[in-house]
Length: 425
Image (tube, rainbow, N blue to C red; front, side, top):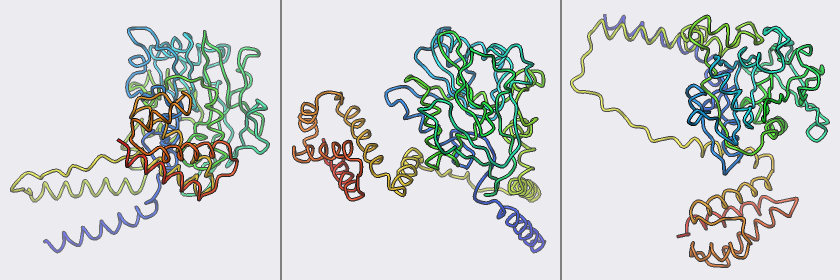
């Protein structure tokens, strides 16, 4: 009996390994999660936005937006709402909250292939049927660019949709030209067929920035220098202010009626992976062979447990894993990317920003005062010799003034700053 059970276990494990090895490294699902480091997660853009305005608040919206964007029933001030996902699901209450939020002078950046009808019907598209706002073209590649001459690039920004490292056909979204009223909407970006994919819509005292291709802000694209520049230019439209990253509104409302009202106008006819996942988690698991076999193995072992009524003499002592410093991993990833591309000056400037931030937080010193006064105060509070502190500021000045900054100079700067951190009071 035991031999048969062992043979069955080996057989099931062999089948699991066979299927899991087909895709054991990457998950190619578009989920745009701020926690996901897979190709089509949004970990990089979420972290970049977190440091986009260093002195401003960054908050993730993990519950209904009306509970976060309103304080005592009044929209928060000097803020930016950001959503990146396949579809934006808002019911009438939360859509009106977002409209009021923008009308009071705030801004909203929404990158999605389909937005809530409650929201879109309140913007200057009302003469269009709600199913006509968004359109799409199927292709393996798309080239994007900006209309404004200061942002436009001579070479287009090229994007592909990969699955298992192979480019596949994809529905590249854009706005239906017949739904864009003249004079009330600013055209910001387009694709290689002159389809408009990025617009600005005035609403009250603020603006909605609507982008039809969230894939442009996925992790896999932001690891490339030109596509990182595209994302930076797109978000450069937002004024300085607090940032609210909306994760909650990626999920569709629970009832069929609410689902039709809040998310029925996008492209893709419901075939997008994160939409399928939200609609049926088990269907998503069974559609992926590694997850499917993991599910089957789990059921099998649960059956074995129930069959033999396994008992433990004592409770299992849980292992408490240390908290992972994902922010440090992210910094190392971006730093490694810059260093490999010989962007030593950029790393030097980042070192300077981090040093100034450390001075502000550790010694409560404003860093915008005259350099000589700042150096004296740092020497006094840190107890670091004057020649060491002066050397750091001289190296910072070299970073700012020299167009070419060698790896040797960068290493010397890093050693000086690290010496300060390790020895300061």
